[in-house]
Image (cartoon, rainbow, N blue to C red; front, top):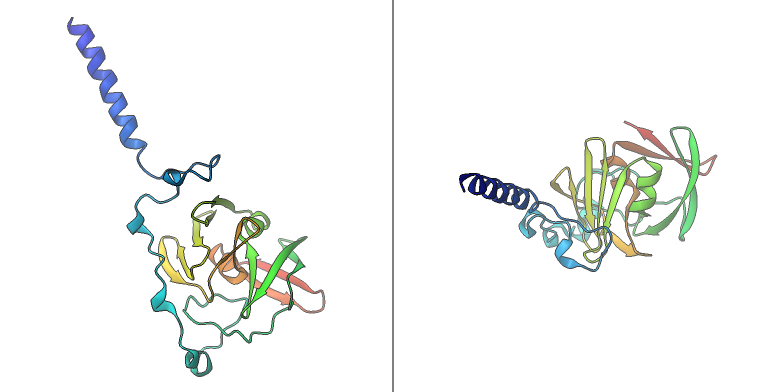
Length: 203
């Protein structure tokens, strides 16, 4: 009888331990429609309320620091008049680690938007897309970037940081400024006018 109680007690403690470990971050890659399996551990951990990051119009004119489309300043400001390599959505040649390929970009308000999946693929990062909440999580080495369509708040290594413009949802993907994606994952972006190519350099 004593042996049965020992076995039962051990079994219950194993079940309790597994249940406790299983209540952290939950994500269901197979069923994006199941909202209960979305990314967040706690809704309060990630606050995308970005009303306080709306830059006044005169701030764009009077700002001391110049804003560029290819550098993420991590400030809540943007220059919509930034000259971009393209004026309409198009594929651009890119070079990463001496490998050439092309990615689809969307010019918007002085920024070049790129799909989180596409940029993660060429930069060797991992990406998870949560369909219901339209959130993408990019990770590479010790870098993590979490962005949500419709918000200009990004979580860079769990620190809430403003992006120059809001991420957008296109073609079942989250599109974000290429400067944010590249800089957050440890890359610098430059434009080679002669080759008409975006160059990504690890920094």
